[in-house]
Picture 1 (tube, rainbow, N blue to C red):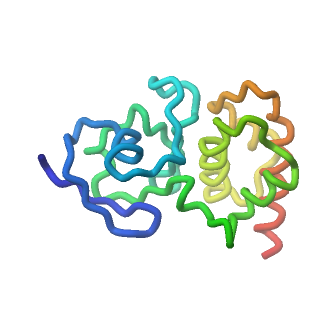
Picture 2 (picture 1 turned 45 degrees about the vertical axis):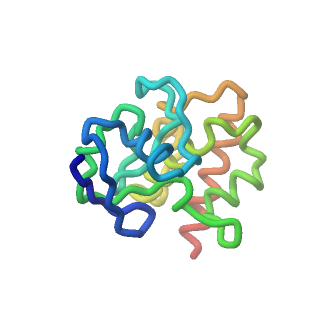
Length: 156
């Protein structure tokens, strides 16, 4: 098996795996990171979003070879229980989750947006989260949470 190297949540990583294996499969199976969820398996629902560089990508249809030498951030790398990311704090404050299955992907989409645009409008937030499906009807609270986090980040 070839070795694929990349930076994962700030740490250099090497994975001996089939380069055509999906990034999601490598994250969950090979590396044991369970925060990124499998949803549709076709890149349509957003449950599996991670950041590659500053962009949110669906890891369920991203081949492992395509992330060689790139920086990947998963939900595990966004923040910690002791030092949560402002998005994580805002989601808790705004009660922006119910079942939580979609939330890791939504947080990664929002984090990518805030890296690219630290002061988004509500419309830009809604557009950035449009590829994420949530069946719990928490979308308005999620938008408020992203706007709150953007304000907090701008103030710091």
